[in-house]
Length: 158
Image (cartoon, rainbow, N blue to C red; front, top):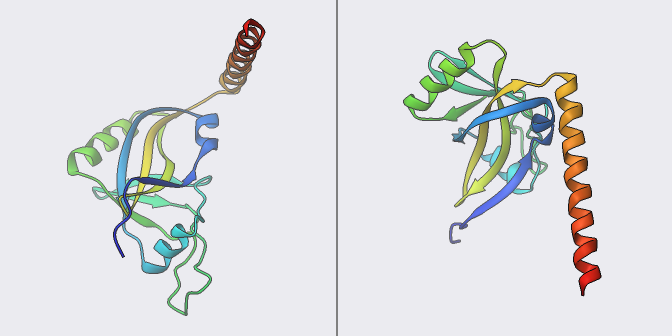
């Protein structure tokens, strides 16, 4: 069977954009077992509670949920196991420096297949305050209203 081409999105962490200001983004590979890959190919994953840590010069994805593969045997994987991320040494060092600043964390943003390989997009994030969240919601609503008005004006011209 030929290898897939392009990018196929599996899961997105929309909550991360609500709770954090996301800065630099990185693409990383993941060390997965066979049943995890099969479960991802079925489009099943959740990144809501996930986070990334740097331990002993290695990046680890923690608390991300990839459900057990239904057709798996006794060798099935644990749903919330810790998974190693594959990054360059330079990227890991840069992430470690970024997280050293107070209030910063590394959050998973999306899991996808890129040319058949499972990848994860991670971002360095700073937590939002409650007023930041309300301001973001107000800006989004204002942008929607402006787009709606513009669409109505363009329809009236025709």
